[in-house]
Length: 116
Image 1 (spheres, one colour):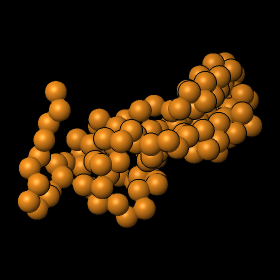
Image 2 (cartoon, one colour; image 1 turned 180 degrees about the vertical axis):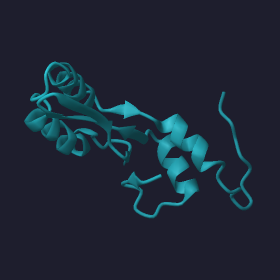
Image 3 (cartoon, helix red, strand yellow; image 1 turned 30 degrees about the vertical axis):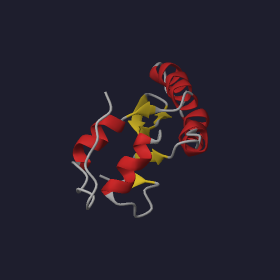
């Protein structure tokens, strides 16, 4: 799985970031070629707490706005859907990614604490 924005963080560091509010998101984009319209998702992007997903969504939003409309009829349907989804922060896939990353290694000398 290719995740953009991890910058060499360990699993434990990623889990700490997620506890602080970071998330993993994917963005939609649409490409149309007259009678063929393709609707796709981006690679997963890691968005840190306090960081906006807007900047990461821009390439996919602009791609959809430029070449998404040109397919009939689905380009006219999928393009606004992709743009709205992206401008809303993308699709949050944090739970799925965290399940794949697995548990963090135990911190030496510190017990794991669960907050209920």
